[in-house]
Structure formats: structure tokens, C-alpha cells
Image (cartoon, rainbow, N blue to C red; front, side, top):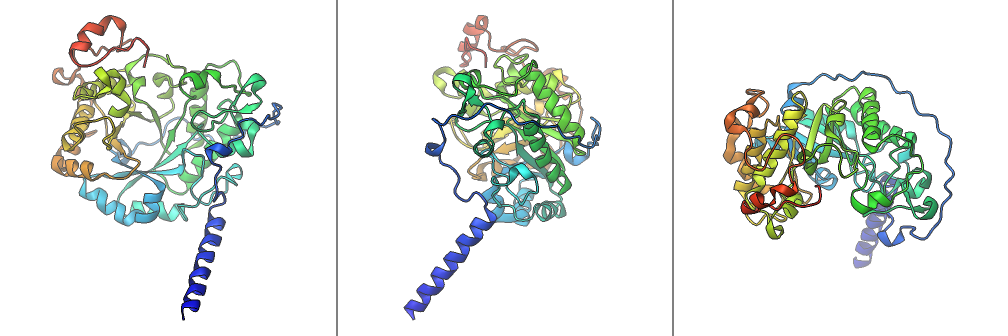
Length: 434
């Protein structure tokens, strides 16, 4: 009897792994130590003719569900385990009406059975039926935002080194800054991202959220070699890419940007994220206003409740510069670097966003432990939350909602000459630009 049980268990496990390798065409992704650091690749580029997509123009219909979306980011594993129906039930308890689901994730995996040619070898089927999944959310009245990670990608460079960012003398080695990166100047790379986004739109997604629409940050971005590079600045290139994507998609585009870009003018870090240029082609901007990422602006790197003023300042400046763009920030739903994390922290972020003129908001927590956020949302109630995007569109201009002190409309907020005043309030003025 025990032998028979062992045989059955072994058979079931075998079938499971066969199924996994069938659905997950990259079941054993390359580990960091397997990255071809020392391998030299040819720098010869393959000829490519950019695709001609249908032109839907630059204006997309903005529904109320787009304008007033507030929701949570879902990890692919959470979505696969919980499913749309249960997720929608949990959202309703927190007076939320939107989800962000990954279509192409940060490692480069396309997470459903895609027909896009370049995705073959980079698929991981955590969403077995994308159209059915989206319909499940729609049936429950949930707005679906399809997230597509653009130029950060650790899968395609291994298959197509000619499309990746390079490093080293002559650009013969593959670039890796915590992850692989694709050559944003490549028309073939851009077409790949647009193809993936179009597939999600055709499956019923209400909007496409483009993430990592930028160049690598810091020293890594300065050392990289982009073999397809032309004379355009990084900001101009990103804007041109967004224009191509906007024309090729018949649903609104939202773009994730660093929260600190809201506290400066222009593109001082060379990321290609110049908000005014991006907003011409993206209907929604989602600055990532995470307290965790602002720790360096506080004395000793310890975040205080002054972070609400930073969130308010950045979003208020963005709203003032771009009054017609939907402003839907990402807020923090995890405790990292926030000693006072709790329901009051969640509420404080939302109130700061509201005062700044935000239309809605999204919460990010890659662990999916959002119980604290849900409690805070229930405490705030639907009456307050429904005000976002539904009352005076000029509420950020009210005297009681305008930032004071360190925050100013133009220029870089953290300027050296402001040091003494900001240190007194517990905030540091970094000599470097954020």
C-alpha cells in the first residue's frame, strides 16, 4: 500500500513539474551569479524597421473610474492565489475601486501567455487567462490598471544582447545595475513594450501603467553604453517613446515616476523623467511618494512626521505645474524606515495627497501585508475618500491647502541656502540634488 502511495505521489509531482515547465517557459531563470559578466558580445546592430501602429491620437476618453481610481498594487503571486473575486471583496471593505496588476514585471517576465514574439523565452504564466482575469475584476466593478515594466529587464538581454544596455570598453559586455537594462534608444525595444501594452489593452485593461520609463540612476546610468544612442537627450527620448505609446494605445496611459522628481525642476539626475514633457503624452502621473525613499532628507536618516509635508509639497508642485493631468500618487503601505508606521501614517499620506490636489492614490506593498492600510481606510470612510477627484478641482489653491516654509513653486526644494531653516524642522538639505 505504501509503495502504491509513493508511486502516486511521485507521479503527481512529475506531472506538476511538467506542467510548470510547460506554462513557465523560463522555469529556471538565470541567477545573479550566472549573469555573463565576463562574456564579450558583438556590438554589431541588427537592421530593424520600426513598426507602424494604428494611430489613435493623443487624446483618450477619461472615465470617472480613471479619474477617481484608488487601489492597491497586486503581486502576480497574490493575484494567482487569491483571484479577482476575493480581491474585489477585500477592496470593497476598504472603500477601494482599483487594482494594479503586472503584465510585464521587473525581472522581465511577461506573466501571461503572450503572442508577442520577443516575449518567447521570457514568459511565466502566473495569469493563465488575462482576458478572463480582467473580466473578473470588471464584473465586481473594479478598475484594472495593467502595469508594464519598460526598460528594466533581466531576461531579454540574455536572449538579445544587441538590444541591451552595455558596459565596458567598446560596450562589449552586458550591463547590470541590480538588474539588466534594455537599450531605450532601440526602436525594436520600444515596439516590444508597446506590443505587450497593446495586448493588455485588447484583453480589456482600463489603462496601461508604464513603470521604469527611465534610465538607470546614479553612477550606473553614467557608465552604461547605449549602442542605439542618437543625438536626443534622455528626456526627449522618453517623451518621444511616450508619444509613440500614446498614439498606439486606445486607453489612457499612466506613468510611474520617482517621487523626488516632484521636488526639482527639469531632469537633474539624467533619468529622462522630465515631468512637464512626460505629461504631454501620459494622462495620469503616479509619483512614488514613499517615505522610505525620503529617509536621506531627515536628520540621521530617521523619517519623522515631517514626511507629510514633503509628500504634500511634491504633489502640490506637480499639480501647480500640470493642472490638467490626473495626479494619482503611489503611497507607502509598508513599515520600512517609518518608526511611527500605523493607521495614522496611512491617513496622513492620504490627507497630504488630498490637500495637494491628487485625484486618487495607489498603495504599494510588495509583501501584500496591507492590513494596516485597510484598517485606516475603513476608519476614514467612503465619504472622505470619495472627495478625491470629486470636489473643487482648485482645492490645492485654497490658502489652507498651500504648503508653507521650505516648499516653493519652482526650483529645487532642497537648496543649500535653506539648510539652517530645514535642519530646525528635522529635515536635512542635501547638497546633492534629489
